[in-house]
Length: 87
Image (cartoon, rainbow, N blue to C red; front, side):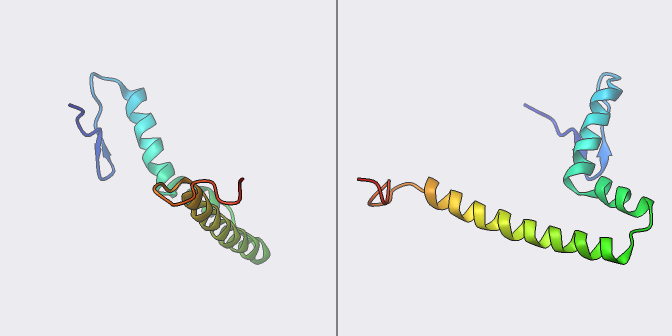
């Protein structure tokens, strides 16, 4: 049975393996976008750069949502014609 390697943002160090704990912590921070937020706020972001970044993130989210919908459509099972459009 695998034990939890972290609870909330507290990372457990097992068998004095600090490097593995650091990897777990970095993975947690990366998934929650905390590192990206830190990198963004390290320096002043000019207004046009802020608008450009926000617009890019919106476009990326729309694109990812659309692609995920298409992939899920193609991968769904138990449909009448598993390969629509093919002869």
